[in-house]
Amino acid sequence: MKKVLVVDDEKSIVKGLKYSLEQDDMAVDVAYDGEEALQKAKSNDYDIILLDIMLPGYTGLEVCQMIREESNVPIIMLTAKGEDMDKILGLEYGADDYITKPFNILEVKARIKAILRRNNKAPVEVQDTRIIESRGLKVDCDSRRVYIEDKEVNLTAKEFDLVYLLVSNPNKVYSREQLLKTIWGSTYPGDARTVDVHVRRLREKIEATPAEPKYIHTKWGVGYYFQA
Image (tube, rainbow, N blue to C red):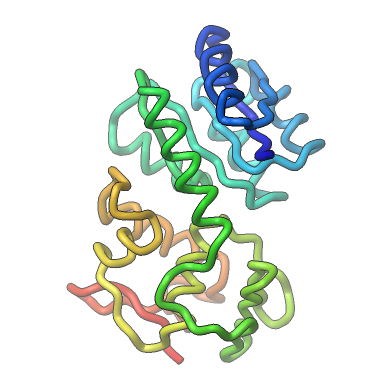
């Protein structure tokens, strides 16, 4: 049984999500403010978290950032704001996806299932090698962990999928559209900027000098590749 944390200060939304997800045999915990959400996220092992941006106490973005310091649990941001910057900002803080209110519960459930499916299998187009090493970078495919000079780097699920795909196919250039389709799925509503945000965050974590990358390179006008 998958375990979900639903965080929103609107009790009617929480009640509706909880009831609907439980109908799909999911175990659902709830929280109504940022502090309660953070406490539950730290003391429980969730498969996914639905997190509203506008919360009392800590904001959803602050909660997302603090969770990311300790966990790679998938996070879907719920927001009443539809502006692109808010969506990108959510991804900057480590969110895996976003859904804009008002939403259809069927869409929420579809997004949850898509993320859980991706986390239960390796990305496509990858080698069968369980550990990949290159110039101080080590990717452990089974445990989904990444190390730089034997020091573990804390990546989100999407960041791991991205580095895994690129490292497994060295020197192959992927367009932003290819990466979006491969990592996020063909039905993902976001655009190529989502890829740029994740590449930038990934570089900040694995590159000694992100502006002069050692691993993840840009092919200008085309996309990204891992230099072997």
